[in-house]
Length: 163
Image (tube, one colour):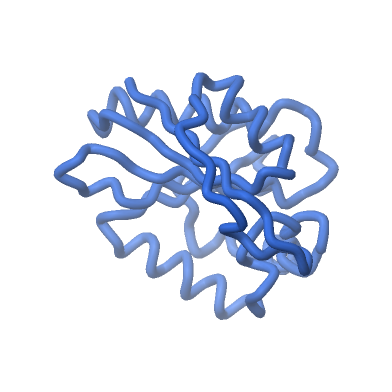
């Protein structure tokens, strides 16, 4: 598994198709958006041009299977939000999300000299919570009925990792 900056050439129909899969977007605001090849190319282009964002693709044997993003990296507070997605369900349950988060933690700490990473996760997104906890993130707070996913309100669990 490797992570590298996502490029325009990495945007494919397979990538776009992740966002039509209800399982993949179950705990994401992406369930409220419409995706297209051109739209994802614009998204990647905007991320590449934004000094505040680092968008990485997650690759296995040169196959793009997911994304991980750091948002807010240019901050006087030296913190950034991390979010991630394994879009290709074949790779679910193989530890790739955990490994990708671990690599981004290392990059954030060593290369970017950040002080903290944080993430918000739906209470019922057990897998994502475990990925964060297994990478040393600590539950810092709970926002009651903060998210509306799958026609129900859910609590948001706010995690943080201070280096």
